[in-house]
Structure formats: structure tokens, C-alpha cells
Length: 249
Ligand code: NDP
Ligand code: 8X3
Image (cartoon, rainbow, N blue to C red; front, side, top):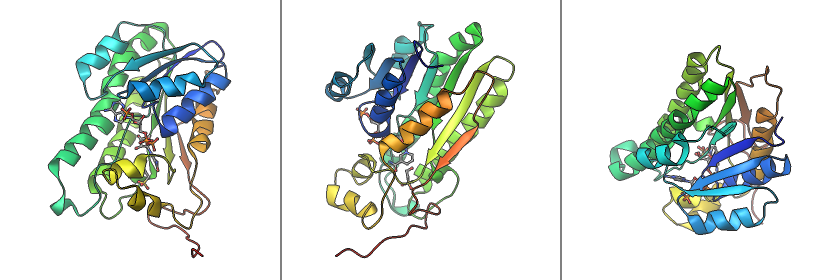
């Protein structure tokens, strides 16, 4: 299924996106990798044994996304992975700039990339949009209202797009992970690495490779099989708010 296909991944410079790049390369796909940090994309590409195109694009910039993706008709799979949490605290004390960052990246970024890529998939009668959602889109947790809202929006965009594309041959899926140790929490806590490390203390979180395995599995099903959603939790996690932590020695 994936050999000689072209897979575009947003947010491929780190974490889950970088792991997806490695996993799709291993499956024989050509890659179009996008993120804001070109140096980090170059680093990721350096480890891949396949054709790789790097696009330095901010998914919030609709004109740039259109320029990068709109004119091309070769993308078979789009992994909408770029996303972030920015800030953690009660909504009434939140910084509206954090809200803008999350809403513009996690919701509008998904819309921008999808809108640029899907028309050519419809013309070709095939293609696959795989969104990286989150357990946060299925359950709200304290201090994360806006991030959870953005991921709930991704869930609604996923189901709505699937309805709108019915009959076109284009598939729509979401992979919704729980805790994955990446740069996610460092970004959420605005660079505070010590606080970020505490999120994963005393438990075994998912790795980016665990999520990439699921994404590649979803994209690799035969054309008549549409995996609607995959929820992936660490064994030490039962819900967005319930985790098992072992005492630290
Ligand atoms: P990372 O911070 O490691 O990676 C985030 C990626 O998104 C980076 O490559 C970053 O690249 C990219 N990105 C952020 N903003 C933009 C932007 N405006 N334009 C283009 N690219 C952007 O975190 P994760 O790998 O954990 O996050 C990937 C996805 O997984 C996100 O959507 C996140 O919400 C989701 N997720 C994460 C979980 C976790 O526990 N880690 C659990 C569930 C879901 P750059 O900065 O170079 O632009
Ligand atoms: C990221 C995982 O639990 O921090 O979506 O929301 S969580």
C-alpha cells in the first residue's frame, strides 16, 4: 500500500511527526516533511533512506500552506500532526496569546493543510487524511480547557470531513494518543524542562514510535478499509486524568 506512495507530514521536525517520517520511510514511502524549524527538519531527513522534500511552512499561514501544497497533485497521505499545547492553568487566568497559538495551529492548521491537499485527492479518487488528535479531544481535564477544545475540534473536523468525502474514495482517520514523551510538555510549559519531565515521572509513557506504528498501520490498510479512529494509551494510563505512578526511589 505505502511503497512508492507520497506521504506529507506536518510537524515532522520533532516527536511524533519525526517518528512518523522514519516509519513511513521504512514502509517505502516518499516523504514531504513540513515544520517551521528547517534545521530540525534537515536533521530528521538525514536519517531517512528515501526521497524527502522539506518544506519550511507554518501551518497557521494559509497562503504559505496553499503555496506549498495547493499546486501539487501527488500527495497520497496527509498526516496532520503539527500541534501544540501552550500554557496550563485555569481558563480565567489564561493568556489569550496561548489560546490563539493553540487554536490557530491545532484547528486552523489542520483545516489549512486539509483544504490545500484534499481537492487533488478527490480528483484522483483516492487519498487519505490521518489526523493526530488526542485523548484530550475526548475528555476535558482541568487546566487544559483550550487545548482540549482544539483537539475536540479536530475530532469533529475528522468526522465531518469523512461525511463530506463519502463516495469520493478519500479516507479520513484519526489517531488519538494519551501521554507520549516528546517536546510537547516542554512547549506547553514554555521551555521549563524540569516541569515537563514531571508529567512523565513514575510512569512509562508512550513513545513517538508507538504512535508512528499506529499511524502507518492506519495508512497501510487496503483502499476499501477506512480505520475511523485509534485511541492509544500507555498501560499506565486509563483516561486523560487517571494515571498510575510508581513512587520514585
Ligand atoms: P512536539 O512538540 O515534539 O512536536 C510538535 C511538532 O509540531 C513539531 O514538529 C513542531 O515543529 C510542529 N509545529 C508546531 N507548530 C507548528 C506550526 N505552526 N507549523 C508547523 N509545524 C508546527 O510534540 P508531539 O510530537 O507530541 O506533538 C505532535 C502532535 O501530537 C500534536 O498535534 C499534539 O497535540 C499531539 N499529541 C501529543 C501527545 C503527547 O503526549 N505528546 C498526545 C496526544 C496528541 P516546529 O516547531 O519546527 O514548527
Ligand atoms: C496530549 C496528551 O494528556 O497532555 O494531547 O492532553 S495530554
